[in-house]
Image (tube, rainbow, N blue to C red; front, side):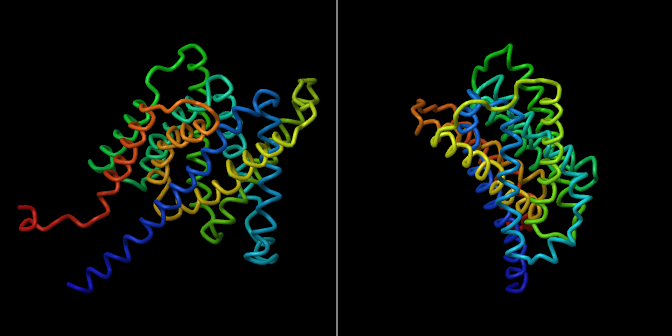
Length: 312
């Protein structure tokens, strides 16, 4: 009996690790929303996306080399990473910004909470997940929580905003799944960096095209020190660090379960907006509580079912 108990303890540790990583990733990622809210006043979404990729890649690659050594980094499957990450992680953040530009920080965070549904579909389609009742119930709770958190949403700009966000979360779910599945030889650091470099290349190409086409996308104002601070928060917290924690979480518990944590971001965003002078929102708080309950319920399936005599 003691042996099985010990073994059970071992099986729950990746679960715990995965959930802590998932929660931390979304907590840090939520800082990007208020930052983007301020930056979108003076920046084009594509310029902001490119800037964020450049900062993140310059930040992460030296760390990756320091941790794992130049040889390992050089031998990483760069081409595969770029091909997978380019279209997925390259376009996902841009579409997310477009969605936020059309709506608002909190609304964008709510729309992003469609990620668990999309991620679950990815795992079901690829045959990695059989839908169990507890999982579906948890998923339903997490979506209900997200809806409760918003209440009424502005309708007109929402339709395009929602469409952009759906594109963003679909690309993000597929990209995350492929990044973790197709590089078994790479550590989470590589899982985060390789697709990000792909994203950088695609974004730079599109941005170059926009400039060549004569579109007004170059930031032409004097960047203040406050703005630099927001840019760094937007790039490093919103992409580099959160992405690293996120792919590590996906590696531990899979893309569907990890993505449940995104549904608490509207609450985190509201807390951050509070510090910036916004009002407390009970709906967002209650919504977040329902989401967290959903995360718990969905994972009940991992524990062994009780014996019939223990049920009474």
